[in-house]
Length: 370
Ligand SMILES: Cc1ncc(COP(=O)(O)O)c(C=O)c1O
Image 1: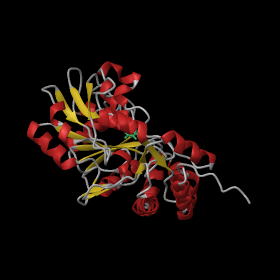
Image 2 (image 1 turned 90 degrees about the vertical axis):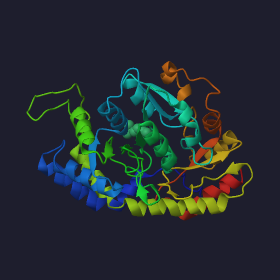
Image 3 (image 1 turned 120 degrees about the horizontal axis):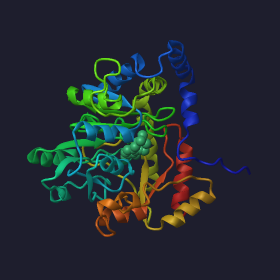
Image 4 (image 1 turned 90 degrees about the horizontal axis):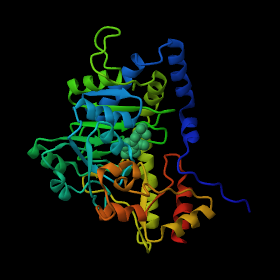
């Protein structure tokens, strides 16, 4: 009998095949326009993505890491300031904080949703705190109501790291509209992915978004070669904007398809000994960027899946307070027991809208048999 086909974590070729004709038309439109940076394609994406998130303003940038760095800079975060965030995440927020000359302060997370534990937030705040950055990890919205309540009481702003959460919502309000601003990544494998790097900052505050825009375009003033502040080049490509506009039209359906695969996984895996399936907090709707289990014997499961041609990945094997790159922040093992434990237990299974439901069953059977 033929071996079953290997299963990747994501399949961007399958996704492109679903939108090939629309995509080719959109790409041709940009190429024929001769306008490759900024312009109508970019402003149309900004307006459409802002509307999708339910927020008034958006600025496209070169990637999600720049989105975070520029948002911090636009709020004048700098030396002597602290930014409070989480450590069980991708390194980008830590880099953005250090790049601004500020100090990252890490708060532990809730073991059920893997997002910032509001019960531990208050004691991480000091007179130097400028900003709180919860991460909507794996697509699950952070517990924003208590976080915002603490922030408001202390006169602090909240920035959502929504890089994994396009389309997630809390009590019907979408990620991107929950905090004072939000940052998105359109890295190709995200729920909304470009054909290269791209990112976006969203906010209800138009003046803040214009500051981000200026910083992302060499601090440009109203006149050509007038540079008002030292910015950088983090502009969005028109080709990426065109790709994202095509995919945005399908995003709600694709997120529903992710949800159907998640339900199938959970039905098949719930109650299996030695593992915990991911859950949504009441009122929260995850974008299900990743389907991440907690398991007791991760290496055994990984090897078992690999032997059957099934990909799996660890997001993330080392919490960022223990990364050498963050050493200047002074993190030590034991500082964040939940995050550290999760880094030893989490494992993500393949999840993408085109993943056949029979393959979900096959993967779940392999997990149960490990
Ligand atoms: C939570 C989180 N924040 C930020 C980023 C950075 O985005 P980018 O890779 O577009 O710079 C990522 C992306 O990979 C991410 O997952």
